[in-house]
Image (cartoon, rainbow, N blue to C red; front, top):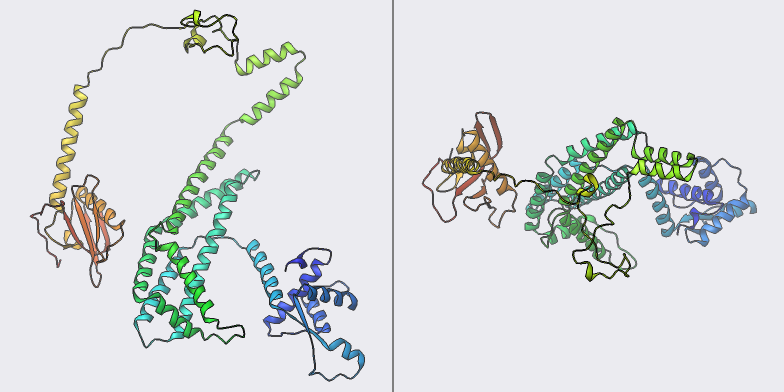
Length: 504
């Protein structure tokens, strides 16, 4: 299919297919010999081209099944020469259209740059919410369902293509060598800032898409595809009904969407893997930047030192000078432990090879002091009674603060998050930790999120409030505003005696 891209006439073959592709965009399905020549000039082919060469190129493309030829019986021909030039008309076959589209796609990939776009995640959420509303309304148009499904799949394909392209460029950037250090440093610093900006609220956006997928699945993905199929208005095909293939493609796209945000088998979503890749790239880029900065601070590098040492070795006048230079550069001396004996020398025969003999322990002091052992007085035992007392007092104080915070936050039933109002900052930090633990888990069938502290003493239950609402929590250091929830905080199995106003 792609043999036209190689050989001496590859440029001519490519220009001819490009001419037919441009004609297809103008709904011209067939071109004669003169029309092909004019299209080549319009595409920028300025070399002189004889009719025999052009016909030979068209014949080769026909041989490769990229072009088809038909006779034009609708024309009136006045001369034999006119009949010979205008009778045959050429058009792209499906194989030719695929080959031309493949080359165009390859060129576009080479010219494109990947990107991590949070706007695509928001667009996916919007399309899912729109489909949820359309499926809930029986009077909605099937055509509108079809176009929304197409937009959703287009956003998903853009996310996949941009993510793969950006990850490839990121890996090439990590391996880039030999570039200008200043430019290299600026590009990597900008890439770190770009990744950090992308990671802001990525978990929340991924969870939002997952919730939208879950809501739409409750309405029925099969019903969604059936209505989209009716709205697609597929034309009849000679080789069979195209509806089944169309539905299979839609199911495959939906499974791809699930794999990214809400896998059916409960595995880890790919959007979280993207989070890990971005974080590892940030760490790697920062390490490379540190090495670049450190190398610029040094007057010389290890590579330069070894190259200079190699020049010294090459310029040494005699072999004895080489040995002295080696000893001065690396500090390697003779083995001074050769006089050491085994604990029981009678077990090692004197006729045995040293390579086969068991090893001898060599003291680390032999190199520095010339002695094998050093004996000193035993150090004094440290009195840790005061340290233990201070640690115990600090632990009691932290436990008292923790118990006081749980007493303030404890509830005897569901309360609104907005009912907490003004809180001490330490108590607010405990509440924020509990809310973070609850929001990090998946909701159960009733929509509730449950979490416990690391010691298992306190449990929190979050439930969504119908109609939503906003909650504002104030501390001496500022205020926090966010969605309102029904909150229940207690020790598992132990009811609390604190009550709050649920309707606050």
